[in-house]
Image (cartoon, rainbow, N blue to C red):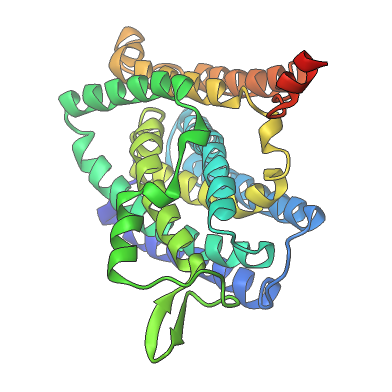
Length: 330
């Protein structure tokens, strides 16, 4: 419906709009490094969600004027479902952000700066993945392969604890530290500093490097997952971008309470399994296209169910080391 040859201008306008929003974000609202408060992160989260919904409505009106029948409704629902999938899977990024910032001791007031440039890199990488995916998804064998990958990733997510992530052992980080000296502590908001006549990277840059590498890994799951919802590259790209733009605000909003949602990874895993099955089997079983309304409802139910289950069944407190031995002696 939206071939690139006819809508290249839209991609240019959309990309320019995103750059303007990012410039306003960093140049106006975050010109000076500061700790992002809960109130500020809540406001920005609302702004990004409203912008995504406003774009979705504008897209619906445009499709309504160009295409007959229920096509406009389907386009709007596919964007919304893709946005919800990417937004849901982005929650897993937040766990990584918390671990990485803690590991590299990145001060709170500089975390927004690291995430800002991380988001820019993520947008570039996602654009490349989506362009490649739009070509590969034309082949049925590739669609089935991606579906199997998503199903396997979902089952692995259920088994793999997030706390097993160790940034210091990442091959890319280890290679970078061999090639470039790294300071032991942050030097303000700088990514590089000159010490004793030699350039050194700061922990902020190493944290940024790891976040970029981890986003490439996340994209292997998230981009095919959205292609399972819609085959329109424009919808995949725009829903992906809006979800990523709101990721920083969502991090500052949820970082302090993210451990409360300890069952969320099971909900995310089931979403991956569902969209994988949709690519491998469900679409064919329903005449080539699984109903988008059902997809939206199932994904929303899985996400909400995992959140509610986490709140109703809190994680049991971890035992204090040595306390059990002390109690046994008493």
